[in-house]
Length: 239
Image 1 (tube, one colour):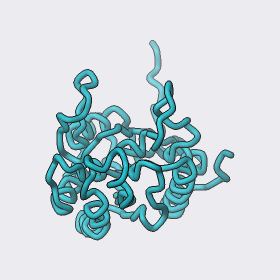
Image 2 (cartoon, helix red, strand yellow; image 1 turned 180 degrees about the vertical axis):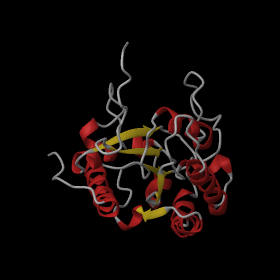
Image 3 (cartoon, rainbow, N blue to C red; image 1 turned 30 degrees about the vertical axis):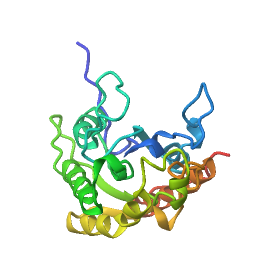
Image 4 (cartoon, helix red, strand yellow; image 1 turned 60 degrees about the vertical axis):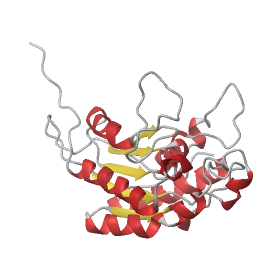
């Protein structure tokens, strides 16, 4: 009879992190160069983070257009894809378990003009995401992962002068108001918090997306924070 192997024995398995976000987690460049509309793996911040951390596995769960908890009928239909982070998060938690840490960095797309949201509405969406992770119940016995809430860098004020200006007419002001609200939620629900504005600024030409340099800076900084928090070993990121 075949013996069932020990799956992910806790004393030797990798520390598993899921980065759950939008286009800046997916790796959308500020200027797309067909046929590629995604940065190379080594240039995306979750992969940079993984290259810095030893004995760690990072799952990239980034979707361009993803919101905290809103469905977006204005985005292109992709075979039934949901743009609501709240709708997809339970599936992601179940399919990628076991997870030790979930990083939530969303809110930028909630600032689109058509949603007519204020900063408190966006923060309420983040609160629902954090609660979803912390209340996750695995049917195979894994414990719910820890949560790191990251407030995304504010949309650049220059966005109003570019191709996304109408879409994010008040985006810079809305996203600039998120850090204090996200920090309060993290404190209240016992999650960790980072403000990406303390590390980077949105520097892509479109005012919303990041350059490769910014991805690398951000991935390295988040890896350093995680290593300190969870006593993980680090190495120099890949060149």
